[in-house]
Length: 265
Image 1 (cartoon, rainbow, N blue to C red):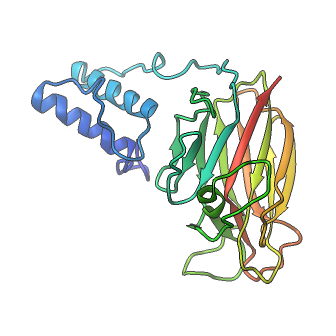
Image 2 (image 1 turned 90 degrees about the vertical axis):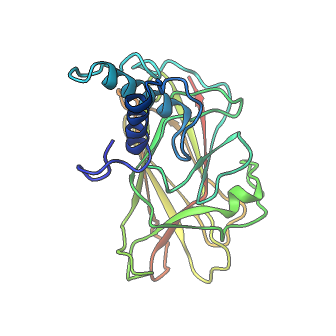
């Protein structure tokens, strides 16, 4: 609920505070209200509403919220691919979960049939920026709209760029995954109009370490496919994105445009 240990998170924290003010000043319960600010998804908004309402009703008691949201242990088996679009703009196609830099945690991840998966995605070591310099046309099996293949999040690991400090890698954490399933993860990375190599490497930490990579420079064809990834016992897969060994760009730029996940036994 806070962004630095003291101040309210700009999305969840402020929304919860607003719900509290609403009920205190008007007597209207926020639970079930349709309004939620951009960047607060359905599941998170409901939890914020319930937390605020409980705090107003019982201000000197700790609220137990373990009945909200999904079961503690995720037993959902997704019925279709889970698709992720990374970048500044949201993809209009609802089959793609849009991962924008404005939010740290995404709690309403759906599969391509529109069903909730119970999976969360958290930016645990954020990317440095976004761009739309990917290709408008691709020939991969991911069947990406041009808006997905063009947009990306990026980081860089060497020298200096844009006044930001380099990062050797950036990290995303998939959480609350079904520990009984295995997952095939496919990654697409691309930056057009390159005169060098910009290989992007993916290291996944589940029950063990899994690796893969893709040459991002001018890429329209290739993906990194890492199969049969088993999450940790508590349902996590940590995705580390970094420059690969063949990356000879002076800044060691690395990219993530899109990702898909297939769940199976």
